[in-house]
Amino acid sequence: MRDPIVAVATPFGESAVGIVRLSGKGVLEIARRFFKTKAEIKPRYAHYGTLLDEKGEPLDEGLLIYYKAPKSYTGEDMVEISLHGNPLILKRAVEVFISGGCRLAEPGEFTKRAFLNGKMDLTQAEAVAELISAKTDLARRVALRQLKGELSKHIKPLRESLLQLLAYIEADIEFSEEDIPTLTKEQVVSMVEEVISGIDKLLRTAKTGKFIREGVKLAIVGKPNVGKSSLFNALLREDRAIVTDIEGTTRDYIEETVNLRGIPLVLVDTAGIREAKDPVERIGIERTLKKIEEADVILFVLDGSKPLTEEDKRIYEQVRGKNLIVVVNKTDLGTVIPLEIFEGHSIIKVSALKGEGIRNLEEEILKRAGVLVEDGINVYVSVRHEELLKKAKGVLERFLERYRREEVSPEIAMLDIREASDYLGEIVGEITTEDILSSIFSRFCIGK
Ligand SMILES: Nc1nc2c(ncn2[C@@H]2O[C@H](COP(=O)(O)OP(=O)(O)O)[C@@H](O)[C@H]2O)c(=O)[nH]1
Ligand SMILES: [Mg+2]
Image (cartoon, rainbow, N blue to C red; front, side, top):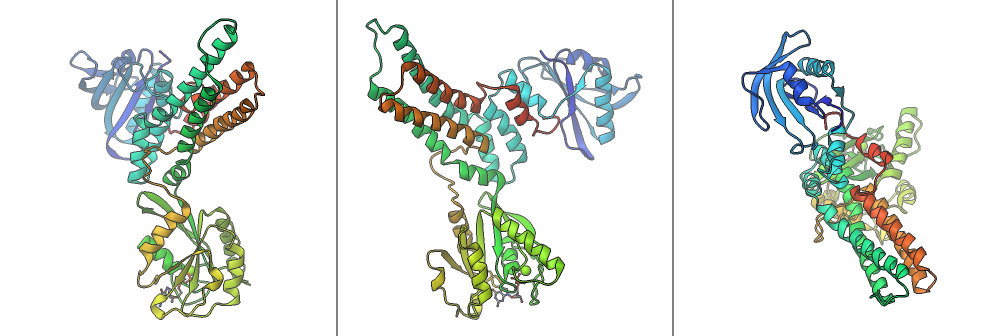
């Protein structure tokens, strides 16, 4: 068991209850010194008692639960004490346990220990952080499935296949003189191809995975007065941005997030792009251009009730190469604008003022972003997983190409297959280094 650590597990602020948790060697003895109960402390029972400070003065009263290793979150002896949720009390309680021999836990250290003690694999540990930070119900469901090991269930068989292949090749090298069953060339190729196709299936979830976790970034652009802020408000279903008929009302961008069927839409209402003399507006326009760069989808808004202007065309030239939806607004005033030049783009007609066509637009946004929610697969890989999957796939493809041309010796084949299987192992944490772990767990907060 590792050295005893302590941290507050609940958020800072006044609340009904606040929890201090301890994990590691000797935590029960440390807790007993300061927490006085009538009865003997038994594992998995709630014990009412009084927490004393370093001088033996009562600090608070609360409930203590002891979890005996290995049946605890971290796999070590753990103690959780529920006190009144006052930050002062919780801070003092931590100090008391530090005086008793604990040290303050690092960010994510409880979960890191759970991983190191084999209570969960790396994808599950990552899911803990995602479950806590999930912003939509879909994000929560995805995180929970990953926490239950669903992603590992997809990764591990792929790695197993590669390890099996490795064993065959190894046997081939060692016993090449003897008469033992080996794989035919076709069998090797089909095994590797199957692994690649399994990897592809997971890779296809990466984009949606990123959207579920981070949201789809949308920039609303167009010349002044076409109704960008009105559209922003209509999508938010809230009057957030200021709408007037004065050009240049929105001088800086405004950003808000709305939940669209489980996908966070990060909406950016931008300042109209135009030649501005006002320095404030000019800065706003520069910042707008940056938001356009970062956007996954751009809503290019036109006033459909008026003819197209040079200004519209100029803005169109700036954004036409991007992932674009042409939004023809103010349909309640009739549509006179010519749309031929936008052929090839999605065109959606709306009235931001009346809220018409907004649902259509939402559907189109998900489609243009490439969100893929139900596809028979119920896991969505993260950016870290995606990188490793791509590396594994790259190695396997290079291997196959040379293997087909009979350019690989069994020794080289072993190196390639081993490399690919190590990348997959890194996803679930069967292969890890201290660097990998600290980059993952440092993103957690203290007490997790
Ligand atoms: N009739 C009508 N007027 C609209 C519509 N959308 C916006 N407007 C009006 O157009 C003007 C400019 O709107 P605003 O959203 O501030 O445009 P922005 O400068 O592009 O942000 C305001 O007077 C809005 O009320 C619409 O769909 N129909
Ligand atoms: Mg505006």
